[in-house]
Image (cartoon, rainbow, N blue to C red):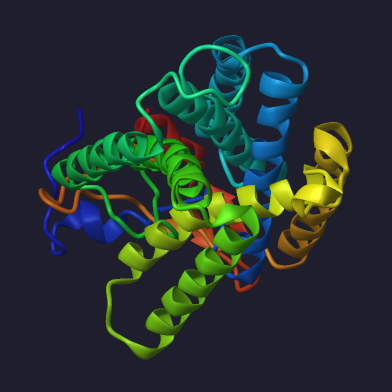
Length: 314
């Protein structure tokens, strides 16, 4: 239980140093979108490698990927600060799980492309409805929608649920666009890329809510990556490079590792600044922090831990 919030003139508030929480989520910049696109593209090719090439089947592959995702997201939620490799491993896990869940929902059991499920269009409708419910719950809990400034445990959990559903929805919507509309993966790639450019223009030239644009872009990078992955693994006579799911996945995995190392080096040179201690957007009450609690921040962005305050917050 948290104590009743005190006014700014309360003696205890004046004497107690300001508290911050170490940042757990990265800034949304160019590198973020590059890493996200590579991660979800790898999730697509890895899903096809297990589910189709190796003929393990969507259900078994989904269970394997789900076990990986649950293990890695638990580590992420328990972490005290941002770790690039851990964060992007979770994003990769959501993409792999999303690929299999979407394929099972749309195509049914098996390991091929036969349509025994509800189809791409209805799959996208169901997942869109589910994502809307997630955002409604998010709003009702009083957590911030600002994905760069999430400092509470509950907010981070909702963030990962939204990402999992978004990547699953991105798979269904991309499959619908490339297959049901007859565009094919190459033309679908150009259509999605054009929409992404429109979202970028809207971000800089309009007053449209930034979080709305973020989640639209987040969803669309999934089919964008899927179309890019298809261009790597599909045979040459289908417009691809013919690398296959194994070598395509290996190349993407190597690229993802290189980018994660680059981001890790950048953050070591310029550490992420801590966030203010989280409070509910609706009630103003303190919330459980999702990272290490600190009390003083130096000019370089490094923070010093307040063990006593952190112990009181547990």
